[in-house]
Length: 449
Ligand code: SF4
Image 1 (cartoon, protein in one colour):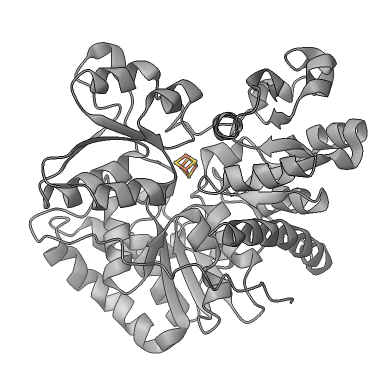
Image 2: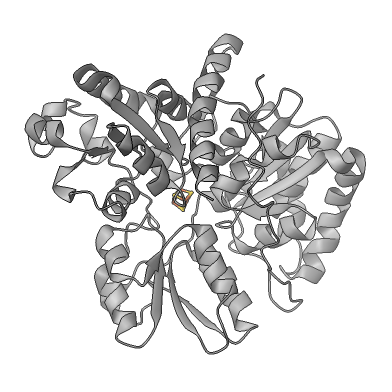
């Protein structure tokens, strides 16, 4: 397998800076026992029987499974988690020497650490699949819970997006380039590669789209219409030349380009065409929420998966990495509102409080008209301590379930965990195309550093 150019100028993942405190419980809501795969139930039963969720209780239990696995695999084992995980996994993964990062940094971990042969990821499936796409043949990637999907990606499966892309390619030929946000499966990333497009993340979407725009491409941005629109705005595009697909569930009922808003005429004038998916966590943020906090003297930062009106009203918008740095650099007395995933903000609040800064969630407004927001990413939090303990123990024993192994091109049903896997030749083709799109993103991002 061809190696990926090393993004040598980019820093290795630094510690998140999260500090554990003995009196603060580690856990979010426990999962019901019947949510666990059969192989993981014994670990879940033990975990659920623990008297509390404090570090002094959880870590001695976890040590029984994690430490033998670390001793067994030595330096070849790498634990990974995303910042949006429930607080306990972020803290646990760091405590055992693993890495916590945003999706861009996670994607690079196999390629950047060739000595790591067993990569265990506690985040959503597309992130593990991206790591697997860039992994060498002697590296294996595992997800602690294969049902941990991303709702945005679930509305942009290949069978939904490919028919739309085929119609666009038929109409615009090689002028059309697909930009696949990291929150897509490998099959959609491969589509980006085939159209000479690229993958992007929330931190480099503007760089990627700008580079393609300079080549005169019409961009088909998949899947998040908010991030696509925010990127167009950031680049100063005429938003009248940005056309969005309707909700994917509506589109697939009548999948013809002529049904898009403004019809074919608007489409032909478009600089950017947006798939209609979104993140349920971020899509609820509004200008009214931002204004509420501004009126009370708070500074507001949001993630660019939020609607444009919220991004325009906020004091800043950026990726999880941008938001985390803002929190960790917040000074004593600073009052910061963060509009992103709930677990992230809860972790941020805990850490900032220790330095005298005040962090609140954008949706955490004591007014009934704003109720219903502030959620965590429920699907990502399907990875919890019993899943991590079980995964590592089963790997050490050579009994890891194959369903937890992640290969490029895998499509998993998040309800049933049924998986569709490509054959070897199909996978090799997909890896080649998806890598092309990932490498393009890496090249554009590293060139801008
Ligand atoms: S927070 Fe939203 S976009 Fe991120 S993984 Fe969860 S569902 Fe997907």
